[in-house]
Image 1 (cartoon, helix red, strand yellow):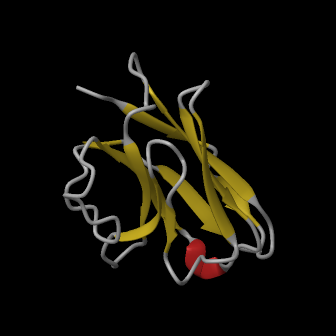
Image 2 (cartoon, rainbow, N blue to C red):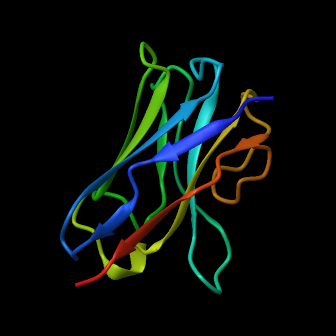
Image 3 (tube, rainbow, N blue to C red):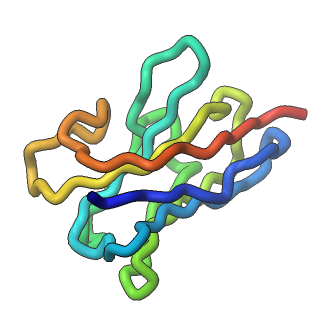
Length: 126
């Protein structure tokens, strides 16, 4: 089964930036649609962003649009989430997830994503 590993989380001040990475152990991510999700304490998981296997299609939650950028480097089999102008409300555990489905998934909820990483903590605080 595909195993995903997130990295790049940490503590950042408001207005700062972080870049998260999502890679697979022993597999290539090149054929998968990849989503980034986050879950803050006491809140439901929410979709942050999603990118198609080719990278030609992306989606963003309204709360991060214009601040976050999802991208992928298929040569490195890695997907990135560049987070700029970060806010305290971005604090959460961030997960990446993968699906081979072309359409039977919901990037806003995570439904249809089959493989998930263990998550990486992102804290935005002064």
